Length: 84
Image (tube, rainbow, N blue to C red; front, side, top):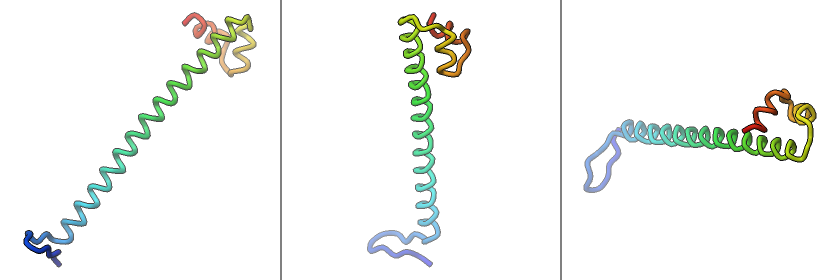
């Protein structure tokens, strides 16, 4: 079966459908790649915010042990974050 267009070359419907399917697949792939990049960016920014909050609490005099307990990290890791 062929798709007829006035004044244009006939293109088999199967080829047209394959092209459409490939374009849709590429579109989904592009969206997936962008979503993954946003998720990675969000994770990095969340950690930066967490680290800033830890540094602020330490600067206010809260002990590393108390901060570690609140954010589910070790006091050693809190010390690393506070040192920058």
